[in-house]
Amino acid sequence: VQLQAYGGGLVQAGGSLRLSCAASGRTFSSYGMGWFRQAPGKEREFVSGISWSGGSTYYADSVKGRFTISRDNAKNTVALQMNTLKPEDTAVYYCARRRASGDYTNVYAYDYWGQGTLVTVSS
Image (cartoon, rainbow, N blue to C red):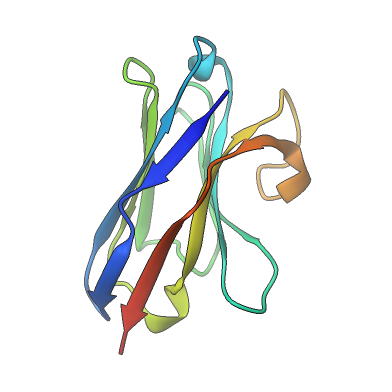
């Protein structure tokens, strides 16, 4: 399984970005997916998760109402639409595949990770 995250960049506060994650393999639709982020000097933190069907979504309180996660199982992709970005959203964003079970917010519940894409929000 390989995950490729892309779509990061530099944006002003209040702006928007859309991150995408492309997954290889034929079992993509069987697994939940998640987005995490890691700012310099900080631990990796949960941002958002989505169940295998897309029927359930999860968000960190810090992004609720501003970010939207979605997936397209036909294209093996998961996306994170980020609106009303804030400087504190600046981080490297990672997509990850959740194991068969586990808390979506727990980094150890994921077994495959993408390489990360940098999001920088200027004030």
